[in-house]
Amino acid sequence: MTKLKYVYEALKRASSFLQEHGREEGAARILLQHELGLSYSGLIGAMRDEITEAQFKNFWDTIEKHAKGIPVQHIKGTEEFYGRSFQVNADVLIPRPETEELIEETLQLIDRHMIKKELAIADIGTGSGVIAITMKCELPQAQVTATDISKPALQTAKQNAEELNALIDFRLGDLTKPIENQKWDVILSNPPYIAHAEAPGLSDSVRDFEPHNALFADNEGLALYENMAKQFPKMLNKPGIIGFEIGYQQGVAVEKMLKDAFPDAFVYCKKDINKNDRMVFAVIE
Figure 1 (cartoon, rainbow, N blue to C red):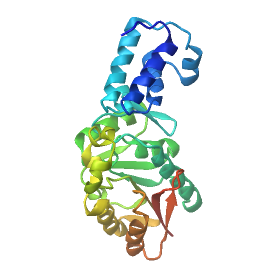
Figure 2: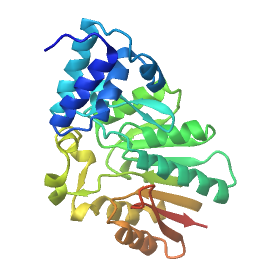
Figure 3: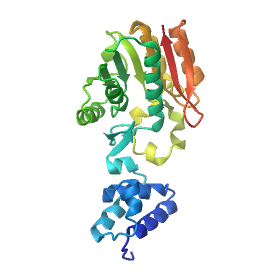
């Protein structure tokens, strides 16, 4: 490989290499920022700076890993979510921007429908903890509980909570089981919702490197919503809020589940920034 002298040369070569391997060339910039410890504007300002052999070697190692499908977030070990940095690894789902929209809508609903400050909030299937931790950081007086069936996922979530000074009650168990004997003001969940038959159509970065127990569900991806919707009526206070993240084709089905469980509730589906059905909410007065 020809020896490179400048930062911009390293970025150009890496971008071309990723493009040749069917990857987003923008990942090269992110990985170069990570290697050099620079912000986006810092990288732009450093384009004519020299890059050391050691820096380039480390950077190129990360580029080759991503070319093989390893997600950028796993290489970096972190992902940004709602303005905060979270640890991510192969044990947890990589946080997506759409989940930020779930939180944003929930906070608006709380502001409109809830009076008391010390809300009891549950996050079912917490993964890296982004929903639970963000809700606690945004509503410090709330009592937030988070569940997951995976011990390694809960360990990652606990580490994130410690780093972000968020006091969360983490509980190991399947779906509602760890929290079913309590009453809640707000219940949120971004459960596995991809049908097993959809696996071949996923990108290899998702299919081969993210945990399948956080991706796939039975009954065309709807099984866990069905299970939770049946349990929620005995678990929710009035007023109460339920918020689900969903697959873009699941809005009608999940709306019906919540309407059947709460006939008097205001149930609606909300689109994400890309105009896809992405969230279903129920507001119980």
